[in-house]
Length: 235
Length: 228
Image (cartoon, rainbow over all chains, first blue to last red; front, side, top):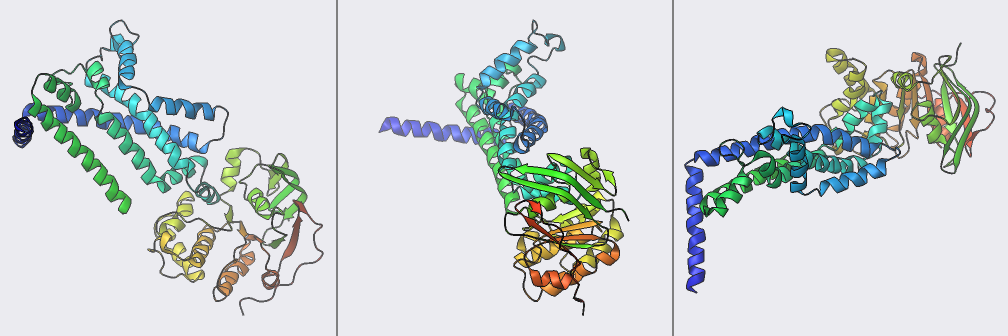
């Protein structure tokens, strides 16, 4: 009974300490949050730039190799983050083909890895949204004088909630991942340390309250993003 | 006068169905009434005329010139408009639905507003600009779709069963709009089963049977005045 009481007490104290760290805007917490949000935002913009056109093409097109491309996309969706980290590490490391760029252990390297993680998710969700759309959307746009590109743009407008869900799913995958951020960012304090890498590090050092504070922020960010999506869908 | 659109030795296949048109000439400012049983290929023929489909063989000529390149088809689609049997309205306001095609033709600002108000009035939906498309009834959707097509001032208007399921009170409004088009030089092709409507609108009857056009019915169906 006492053990249970003690563990409850530990959690409560940690939670209070975490809240205090957040309220006090602890610089390390703030920096980790900022780095996470910055790299994730850029990676998602890039992933949307790649994933939405690819998803639209695969969702609309009827061409040879489409099925193989969809299978590849599904496989890429399940890519372990450490595998992405490993491959990009190999490319960006000093001996690698892109080593001269000096990107390893920088936010840019993290963004590259996170874009690779998120793009297949955005593309797959877009394929589902586009393929499931009313076929009359495209025909209507064409009969009104639009070209295929403008028609595809109109179709994306019609399935905008599906596309937004694609972006949110990609966002969720990226902001919560550790492997890429750790391997490509190096978890450098006040530079490439993100919420997730800080949680992993601080918890292993016994700084449970610090990890908990970042965990709470991470949950809050996820909640805000989903609330935003719900709000848009209700409009 | 050169025909507006000519189909020569057209073969189009979709699954087991084959549409085969040896020759069809559509003259400017004429009304054509496309008849035939279900599955005879009326919708497919309309889609071919709307330059949405590419035939397996044969030639499509627009104003005497063969249409081959896809860029050319897209350009000409700005002059040919199809209103489908079950029209789709974009999930936005009625105004934006009507403005879509106008923007593509660079009709903007006051000219756009005037034209939209004018066609909405013509189909009896005066003041519907701000209504959301998804809040309209089936009959209103058909009328907005017709207004959207009329707003574009097409040289050829193709209508797939345009009045099926419309209220009797709305029918005269619809027919009045269509009856006014030939005088403006617009070629109108109406597919449908309503023989009475065909009598009211007049025009040349085209009969499709199992994907083939029957020899043109001699003479033109005399038009009864629908504007009376």
